[in-house]
Length: 183
Image 1 (cartoon, rainbow, N blue to C red):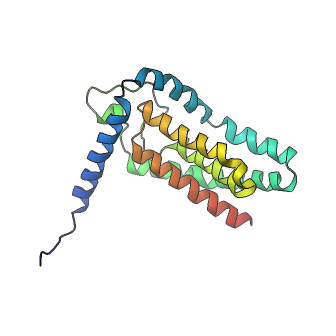
Image 2 (image 1 turned 30 degrees about the vertical axis):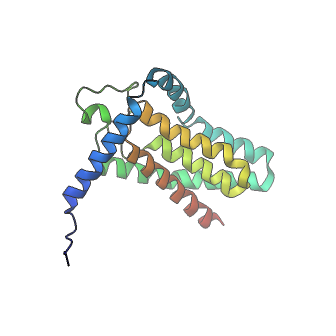
Image 3 (image 1 turned 135 degrees about the vertical axis):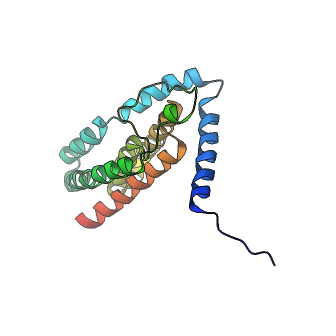
């Protein structure tokens, strides 16, 4: 019977990075890239943070106790999520695609140096999850929007797919934690 040896950590990370890069290049090398990039730029801008402030504030005023509870959860969640995001980003120091892939240029220039995790995706997913946890299925459009925000960051060439996955996991985890803390 063959004995299986686990891959050394370095080899495993190398394999994940290679797979991630192949998926990334497949995404950005579409024949529709120019059209996708225009749309992705617009979608990405919606994830810049304004909606994460405006929507909870609007719902706090218009949706009674549930809206006010949402606003409290959003404030708590972002006070937890942002430091974790910053620590992860500066600990992993994963280079963005233009810095990691020779002869690749992104459509936009990112605001910071590192890519893991995606802050846009984390924030969009966090908001969508909190609205879902407070308002149920009415949050479906926000969940779709959060997915599009994450995809837009890959299509714009500033994140690898695993950056998006990590951002979504961070957003979902902190949303769940904040709801459990506020009750």
